[in-house]
Amino acid sequence: MSCAGMKKAMNRAGTTLMQKAGQIEKTVDSEFQEEEGKYRVFEKEVNAMQKESKTYLDAMRSMTSTQARLAETMELFYNAADRGSDNAMACHAYKQAVEELDQGIARELDQPYRTGILEPVGRMASYFPTINEAVSKRNKKLLDYDAARSRLRKLIDKPSDDPTKLPRAQEENDQTKDVFEMLNEQLISELPQLLDLRVPFFDPSFEAMIRMQCKFAEEGYDKLGGVQRYFSDSIRDEYAAGQLDSQVEAVLQEMKDLTIVGSG
Image (cartoon, rainbow, N blue to C red; front, side, top):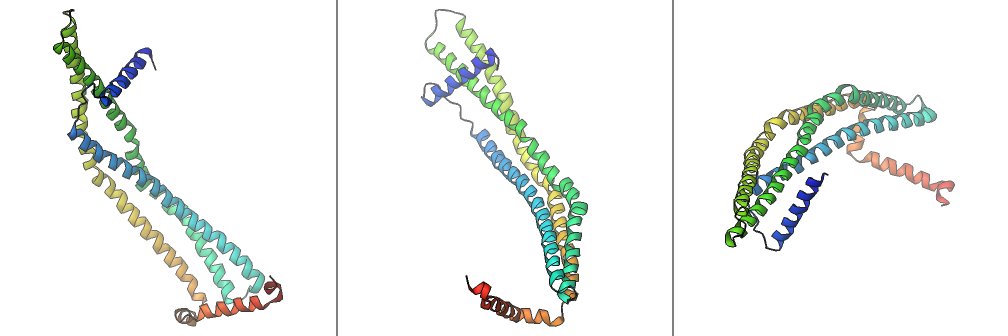
């Protein structure tokens, strides 16, 4: 920071302290505060959307890759236990199905998801630093204006022996006021316009997200549905009747009855 910049920062800090102490009147702009409040909510929502959209894609990748690793382990188990059984063939089909799903994520969904969702949300979020800098600049210019106005009023209330001070103070007041009002009016005008664009901006991304989620679900259903043909028709009825649960419990009890298990 330059010497001039350091001096301005110190002067503004001093103005802020004096405003808190009630020695300098603080300008309250309710119209700007309302628009900034709406913008801050929007900023928070978009940043959250950017984070959660990335998390969703990572979660889809993680789920399909975990399914593939689980299927590989299960296939090793069945190959070692009973390679020719219906369940072993079902496990092989399951492994093939989830591997295709895992590959399909990278091939068919990853880039479209980035293009249709992550990149638009990211572009919107990338505007915030520039907007925040404009808001910060507006606030700094408001402090300059409040300070200049306070100095002018003091000279009016208690004139100086130096006849040049009052005209200089008036000029400084007018200049700082003009700069502040220009920035303030620009933000009051353009912040609502930015928020009005959020729906048409995000509509295509929302539609793309729904379509990709549907495609992912449909492909998962189709591929995993093919695994069911390796199971007998009675399996579904037994599952609905709760018989499979009792069969699992019976096997677990047999394991508990083994000496090497029950000894613990």
